[in-house]
Image (cartoon, rainbow, N blue to C red; front, side, top):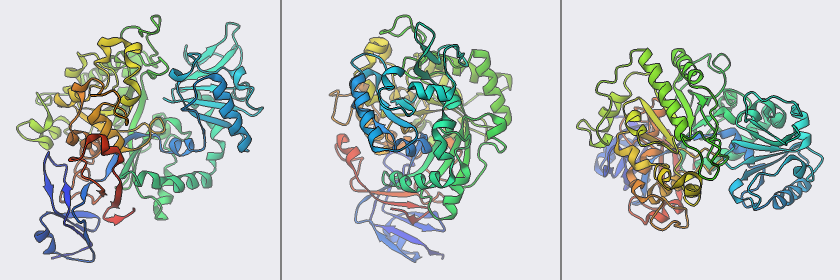
Length: 557
């Protein structure tokens, strides 16, 4: 018999293979799990180290399936505007920040338009009072930025400027830009200027080294980062490789690119190894509910003349999806509004129909766990073959007719449960009572056999799976508001909520046979918690401490 590297005994181990499946012990050899079962079975192995869990709860390591790693690290160097309630307060916070930093660009983040007494973002001339240096503020959702006059000047955005599509830049009545920009305008015209310091390899590596342990402390062993908010189309993959060679990369990283195929994908989805790999091609369909740029089928209730913003026409989106599919890429599409979801489903259906995709036997009538063959067999049927796997990111607001269409397609929904805590008090005013019932309908999705995965969209929300699990289970904020939960019928049970960040998450990167469950043959990515989150009051889940983290059986926390 082998000499194991590590044996874990006396544990409360939730394998996440299926609800209620538990074990007491795990044996690890060469980074993989070789035994799951009883203490007696584990003790039959000789081992270099034995870890007594003392009854503590062990889970598979968490995966954040949607975040922006470089941007999240950079956000820690921005002024915090989340508590600002007026333009004057924004200016005051930024003035204090300017006095404390010698940075060339003054950046503020987490600005909520809903909190502003004026009901709007600040404008360029108001920001000019902060400092002579260029100023950029980022909205909470990152779909809008506000620039002062110096920042606009450096980016070449002046009177007469024509954005790439109508609606991406806001103007005063006299034709001067008022400083508010939307969607990819920042990436096209500001990112290379603002992120100048990040172009220096040493600075990027320093940020990553400083903050990567923040994710480990939250039980995260895998990150799926999206390059939409980074200047480099592959999110500086060489930096991750350098860190790994130095033994300073405590997580597995999948890099999903919004760059053009000829720039970003000389290798297709899946290229890489267990530590660093290329993920999906990222596309955008609409904006965000916060800035009313999410595309809706009917107008916003609090802005009856607005239905949001579609980044592409239907034909353009379908062509982009088809191009990425034919290139060999998984495809991840940002869609928040029900109008965007309609466009995305049309595009996916058109592309698959044109390629004679056969969905016979793919759709399931109910939850994957209740399918006669069980979860893995049902999921394998739906996602058979290496390609395609389509991911719809956010899927925040849907029309009821969308559920059946999603269920029959090889589509994974990347949802952010933490968003619920910010929208429960705003939803009815923004989209009305009837549509609010279809905002983040997580249980409806799972009950219809749709595979959900859990992300944070950090830096929009903290990359904290335990918080996401709690919100998915309670449908309330961390203070328990609203009592009973927002649309309580859409609450998930704890197993389904944990699955978003473990078992289900592995499907995004075709790694369902490598990680996501505590199963023989899987990578030994394991976390130990202070409490059993399956047994405690759900309102205490987010407060649970991550006490130990193992990546490939090696302790990293």
